[in-house]
Structure formats: structure tokens, C-alpha cells
Amino acid sequence: MKKNIFIFTLITLVATLSGCKESFLELAPISNPNAENFYRTRSDFDLAVNAAYNTLYTVYHPQGPVSYTGELMADNVTILNISGNQADKWQFRDYSLAPANTMVYQFWQDFYKSLYNINVILSKIETADIDPAYKAQTQGEMLFLRSLYYYNMVQIWGDVPLVLTPLSAAEAYDILRSPAAEIHAQIIKDLADAKTKLPATAAIAGRTTKSAAQMLLGKVYLLAGDKANATKELKEIYDSKKFELLHSYAALWDVKNKNTKESIFEIQYLGGAATNPYSNYYLEFFPNSNALGFYGAGMNQVVNDVLAEYEQGDTRRLASVDTGYTDAKGVFTPAFFPKKWADKTAPLINQSIAANNNFIVFRYADLLLLLTEATGDVTYLNEVRKRSNLPLYGAAGYPAKYNTVALAVEHERRVELAFEFHRWFDLKRTGRAIPVLTQKGKPVTEAKLLLPIPNIVRDQNAKITQNAGY
Picture (cartoon, rainbow, N blue to C red):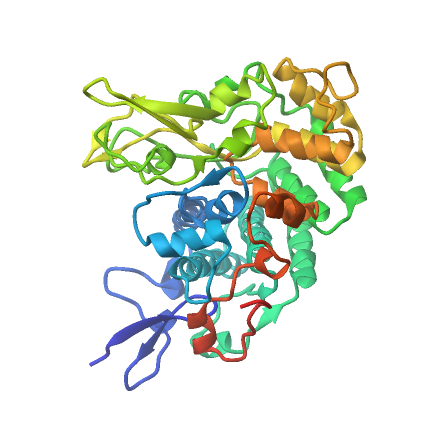
């Protein structure tokens, strides 16, 4: 008898079979075709590609790795009472993370399981007898997703194992942590390839395009300190005139507005039914209460510090932050929480709310602010401010405390992109995380700007090193 015992190695889910020591990759469950007999037709790859895109739901989940680090470890939000393992979740807020933290380990698994699916597709499509144009586009899409995940992982952990092919259990133990610079180089290589294979416009909503690849490439170049190449990639998107700011900031968050002219890459959700991939940002960011018939998780509750960052008359605050909720008895409870993903007309299903909001990963305002960061030209930043009818940088009425272009960009990104999982990564990229966050009482050190490598990973492979400070 074969007995599957599943363990997570550093890169993927691997089964150790008692007696015969086979990898789960060698097994073909009766109800599921494996890689050896599945990846043959375009329909096969369509299913696999859809599954690869579905991993975005995990990585960008409101309680996923990009949310916990991008927001909770910065200064826009906090958590108070929250569903689940409160102690482990509070460690992100308090910079008291331990290698035994269950959330850190879950995030590690989430990324590497997602990468495994992507790498399988890339390995199988290379020799598949299918239409060359379809093959090239699929390769471009998977290279983009792989690059997006490694881009986030390097910011979260620093050096991580760089896995570019599906590995067996035995092979996994030989893959150790690669330097961040090496991973950046691989991302740049993959994205340079991807942008030659991706279409200018997606035929299917939510699929990646050349512009999305260039946007990510620009971000990676900025992260690596290469402003010249970042400008080149970002400016090409700008000059294409494919994207523009919506007239109203609030319109971005209207649940009926999806894949607008401002969206460069957007994760697709479909609300309304339990069988749909409905959005859960509204539920997760709602206070930890069931006053409206569903139980809010209490994630990313807005703090006074970011409320004070909004200038007088900045309508983005009203569009971004809810001020409370009224229960069925008409009792109003004041609370500050993200409003961008509210869907108050969504149906209740088993004490959950089947919201219809998409999640925008890259949008045009982000690109404009990155262009000012890369070039020092405030023209792009002022386009963002003009939409909100605010005094332009360099004009009378602009806040004197943001008296450099760098501080102006930092301020504008904070309020324009609030709660969209950018803040911590922005502060780290610009070298501002320690001075900004320590001033606000966060016990941040250089070592604490990376998460620990999970204990279980190192227990499974002692050759994997730990980050300094843990």
C-alpha cells in the first residue's frame, strides 16, 4: 500500500511515499491527469493557464503576503481584534516576527506552490505541438506572473531560492537561496522576453499585456536603482497613450467600473453567487463585527496618521476611507476602514458577502508617480494632483513640508495609492522605511525589513540560511 505524506520543502508540495520514496509528481490520481498525460492540446494549456492566474487570488488576498507586508508593516493601517491566530498576525504590525510564525510559513508555501504551477506550464509548452503564436503569448504571460511573484518575494525575504523549472523532492534540497541581485537579473531577463511575446491589448479581461510587463520591469529597475532604464520602460507606456486617469478618483472604486482606461493590470472577480470567484476585500477590511449580517475580519483598519496625511479638500480621503457603519437597528458605530472595495449591494451567502470588486495591481496613477521618482520631473506628479483639484507642486498653496521632489512623491503615493499594498514597499525602495516608521513608534531595524525564513523550511533543509536578526 502506498501512503501519501505531504510535506512542504523549500519550493513545492512534495510527497514522501512510505516504502518506495516516490515524488508525488510521479503519481497519477485516478480522478486527475498528471503532467505526463495532460499538457498536449491548447485546451489543456487553457485550463492550466487559468489555474496559474487563479494563484493571484492567493498572493493578493486581503490576508495574503502582499497585504500583510505592503500595508500592515507600514503606517497606514493596524489590526485590533481580528479573526484567526491573533498573536501571529500582530507580529507583522509590531515588528516582532519570529521564524515560527505560521503566517510567514503560509506565505512561503503560497508563493512556491504558485511558482510550481507556472514553471510546469513553461516547461511543458516549450515542446508542445500547438500554434506558435499561442505558445509565445502563453510563455509571456507565465514569465510575467513568475516575475511578479519573485519581485514581491525578494522584497519580503531578500535572498530566496530561485526556481525556474519543476523540481523533484531530491532536486529541491540542492536549491539554496540566490542573492537578490541575481533574482532581479532573472526577472529583468524574463520580462524583456515577455514583453516581446505579449499583446498590446488583452483579448480576455485580466490577462497580462506588454504594458503590464513594462510596468513591472520599470518597478524592478527602480528597485535596483537603475532610474535610466526604469524611465525608458515607463515612458514607453506613457507615450503609448493607451492609458489615462479617470475623470473622478471615486469612479475607480465604483463596483461597476472594471478594467478601465486607468487599469494596467487587474485581478478579476465575479460576485453574486457562492460558485463565483467573488471578491472578499470588503469583508476582510470591514471591522471585526457582524453588524451587517456578515463577520468582518478586521484587517487593515485605518489609523489617524494616514488620515492626517490628506490635505484639506482632498476628495481622495472620502473615496478611500469609510467612517463607520450602521447596523440593522439603526445604530451607527464609528470606525475607520478601507472603503475602496465596498460592495454594499452584494448578496449575503452563509454569513459572507459575495462582492464584485476587482483588485488593481498596476494603474496609471502609479506609473505617473513612478515616472516622477525616476526622472525628477514633477509634470507627471502634477497630473495626479490635478485630477483631485489640489495645488500643483511648485505652485502657491502646495504644502511646504513636502519641499523636495522625493518627499512630494512619497506623500502623493501614500494618499493616491492608500491601502493598495504599496506603502511598505515604497518606503523600503526609497530608503525611508526606518526613519519614517521609527518616528511613529515602530521598532524597525535594517534586519527587521525582511521577514524570517520559516523554521519548517530550515528544519527540512539545514543548508538554507536564516536572515540576520532572527
